[in-house]
Image (tube, rainbow, N blue to C red; front, side, top):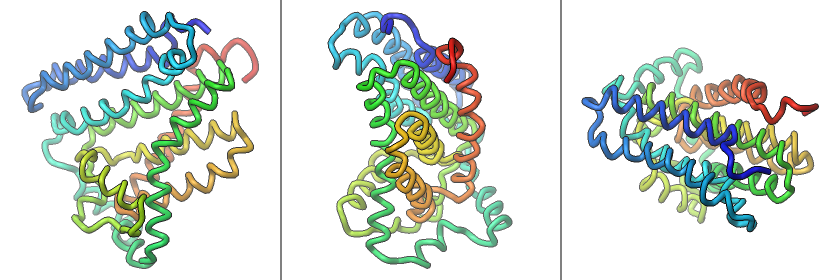
Length: 286
């Protein structure tokens, strides 16, 4: 596996950050502290070349692992960036329109009603755990495929994962929606460690305008598909966790139900597209 050459995930990372940098330059007058967020994109562009030209030359396992999985670490900076540049087109959050749509589709607001119907603390704690598992799912499958030395599978998974995340981030930038947090109601708390961890993450790491589509749901769907494809025995464990995560996004009032449906649609449309575009899958059956 040539780790000093640009692979398709590297190219997707370059393209995403180039697009965002261009967006910032075009709309800089509407973006507070725009040089900071332009610099963030340039730093992520530089990280791609650093991984290929420097880290990629080392043969030891930790360096190789970092070389392949570094885009997953950049997700957190790119996510933070979206929250600072997503008012360039629409200066106000678009939540009122989503709330009206939910009322028309569901006859109410599922994010408000669901936790009120099922107030059990154990259920809240379990669903907070499922929501937290998102951070372990996408990284864990990448590490598993790397350790199996499954080159084609790793390329297939990482490109689909990263390209789907970048697509979600681009929509966040263009369509700012806060999600069910817009109701300013307390998030269901189970009183256990996962509720406490998620409360800390929500208070300190969440940004406004990054709810539609639900990247948690889109990425969890990607993880489920590739678990079924490349680690089928683990599907029995991952599938219930993914479905619980999807329920948790609404129950815990992190997202509108429409965000969940949009996240599923995003994954359903993009996974086949990414697999068609990936050159690593063109030289034989896959």
